[in-house]
Image (cartoon, helix red, strand yellow):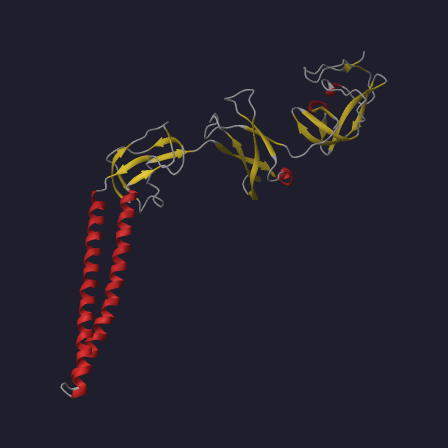
Length: 326
């Protein structure tokens, strides 16, 4: 579709319904093309009618020659000429009928091109970008290939938003299609949007070593907008009765990871194995029983076997210190 924009009926921010008229491109040339195709079709049909009359006349002449040759009023050459004229007429009408079909296809194409000059919304949504104004020239031949071309309008349907999440390599095996997801955006503090994993790209980005996961979030009130940044949590599993401690209580030294517990008033170094991290807490899968106090704040000030004076804490509050006893 090539032509100049004659009218744009919508602007940025407008909500439009499916099949609503958005843009009208000057269609003068397309109307002429439709009229020309109609005229060509009528002419082709007239040629068929004329040729059918020619066939009828050739058939009458052929039948006459067949009757007259019985009494030898005409020669065999005359009969052969009549037969040839009839055969030619029959062959020509097939060609003319094919031309009628060609003209019908040309008319359909011209009418389709005319329809394309009225650009309608393919779905219900909102206009997010308007690149051109009335009078601008648009070309369909370069719209999808030229790096300089721009769409007239950009539409978005955000009743369901798709969120792209980059999952690090070590967690790739944990993500599955259908897993529930929670999304939080800074624009809506305290609000949680829920959805699920719909697609998993089965390849890692070689530069970031991450795998892209697509999460669909229902957004019926259109609160989430395209291009927003958000935090997404995927529920990859449930560990019932998991033992968790504040992540600040864990000390990592090269390949070792350990915590300090308090036993009989002394700090005791205990190697541990870690599990899932969540909301500032980390799961302990091996090393602790869940009954021994763990030093959180001040763990870097103690050593194994030193006497300490611990202060109980609430994990929801800032961690208290545990210092060596005098």
